Picture 1 (cartoon, rainbow, N blue to C red):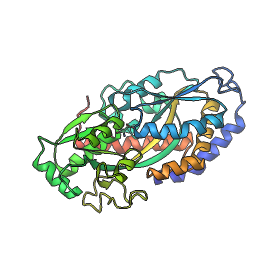
Picture 2 (cartoon, rainbow, N blue to C red):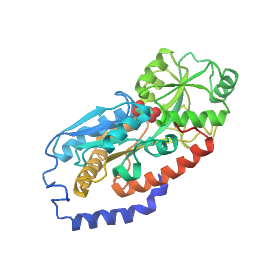
Picture 3 (cartoon, protein in one colour):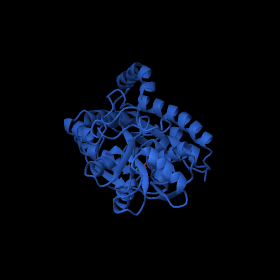
Picture 4 (cartoon, rainbow, N blue to C red):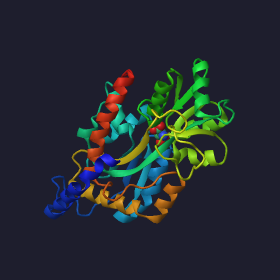
Amino acid sequence: MGTRRPRIIAALAAVSLAAACSPGGDGGDGDTTGYPEQNITIVVPFSAGGPTDTVTRMIADPMAEALGGKIVVQNVEGAGGTVAAGQVAQAEPDGYTVLMHHIGMSTAPALYKDLGYQPLEDFATVGLVTEVPMTVVARPDFPPATLADLTAYVKANQDKVTLANAGRGAASHLCGLLFQSAAGVKLQEVPYQGTGPALTDLVGGQVDFMCDQTTNTSGQITAGKIKAYAVTTPERVKSLPDVPTTTEAGMPQLQVSVWHGLYVPAGTPPEVVQKLSGALQKALADQAVIDQMAELGTAPVTAADATPETHRAHLEEQIETWGKVIADAGVQAS
Ligand code: ASP
């Protein structure tokens, strides 16, 4: 997330200025001083039990505690996370409907012709949450032993091999595209509503392989229930010391890590956004959250990165970056 660092001081200055100038009440949309006065819903765009869901549930309680309210997590599945994002874009901008999304927020505009929402216009960013490495994993009895073997195997068996993902626009879809492009193959993709159920099928041998966040795959890798070929980050993951990086394994082009952030509908009063962001920062500093994340191969972002301004700058940069990659890969918009 190095591209955002120079903006941190400016972002913090903007936050303090906004706080100093805020009347602390009416944001043009009613009195918000008592926020929250009802349950807050965090919408997760993928299945329960998957990685996005896991990260959301880790921070929901400490955020609720910091806010002095209650947070309910709701899974709204479908179309690689775009159903949930479309729904939250239309929600009342009152701070009671929040979206947890990941890198898919930045890839969907290039992957969907008629997305139905615009990430930069229809949402206000609350803050980044975490950045998670991906793993290339396979069913336990899948023949290839290494990433190089996998590449050779899929080339020789293109018509047979199945690649699971969480739908077009999901991180697993993006990683699968990058893999296919690096290997020079076109495989049969099997879309799920999230990689939670995809992982269950992988363990059961119903699909051959996939990419997924360490927040979902770590436990099954460590338990020897699935094969792990590589992590998609420049460094190995501490909690998975035996799994090589894609660079070490001979596929340096396959680099992707999955950043997550919280969003509210555009028009949400700024003081409500600041309250949510402050609660997010507190949750991310919670030792239990830090420990749980470390066990799953990730870490919370810094307080400076869990701000609306830093998050927005990152989203802008990522939309541009992935837009080019997807256009170059020649992926058809639906
Ligand atoms: N890991 C999934 C993805 O491919 C999403 C999820 O199920 O959380 O984007």
